[in-house]
Image 1: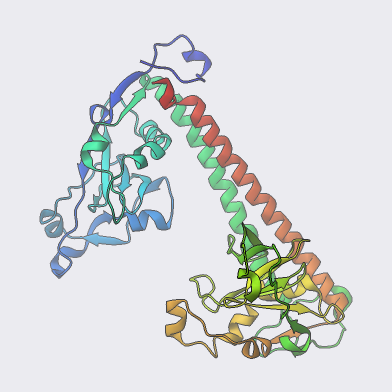
Image 2: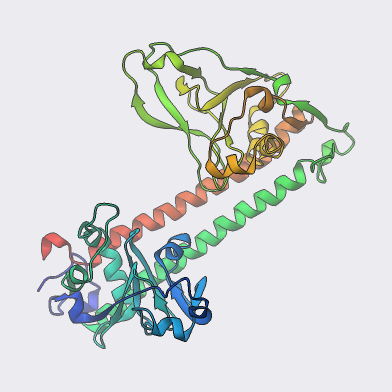
Length: 417
């Protein structure tokens, strides 16, 4: 028997929580996959869930799956139809994705389903397993990838209170999840608004004026189209033996806005082939990703100089007499360079992630350039939206941290068991 550090007032004098194995509070079932070479087993009307699908979109509830099987396929695999309101958990590749199924569904062998007994609320069980995720992951075994066995899951011990206290806890976390979902929707709306605004504020491909201009620039001249190399200088200064922090461009949520530190310093003479970049410089990462198939460019914002590998990046400094730094950054955020570079990159190269882009091709990228005052106006508008997006991300992070901290209070700790 044990108790959490925090209990709701009406349960302050209630009995301690009761220690139970997961197999004592739920029925645990294994999944399976019908033979993929038999067409009659597939494209039916029965939902079939996999860890890969669970990892694409982390949601609490699931009512439909991407792949479906037939009744014949279900009959000829080791899965059964999981009852509604079970907790489906991925138990390999990786361990720990969780959903509650709102319709009966089959699962593949990388999942296990926990169907709660009558004295356990399904939403409480969802949060109980979520709180124990790291402990369950530690039970995984295997060389190629970790897998949580059925026996380890069944004998895993946790604690549960009475059904009314379970419901109170589940309601608390459900309300927090609803709030996080609402804030995520607001974040998505902000990002979509910015994307739509950028498409209005910058000229479309082949055009020289945007569809939307600020009032003071309505009668201003058309925009010029200039090659990137005409107002930037290639960074060629070598770091030599300087003990500078190395940097790597990293993809944030949605758009690339800065270069983040790796946080390591290379010893000896390893710096000789590294370039030195400074605040306001840009670096192009010649690596294809799903979000940026032609590679991506980031603005370096730190006041300290940094070393960056010349074998991976093309670095350059803008001429501030011609281009406003944040304006240029927003052009790259909209992937203007990608539209141009795809002319020189094969589909196969993008698929494999290795892009042999040289600086001449990059510097030939045509970019739409208005006057400096108009550049500044556009940059101010878009960076103010970036600030709102950053603030919204911080709000969501704070809510998630609050939820994590509350879980540690409302569920007994391992040490207290």
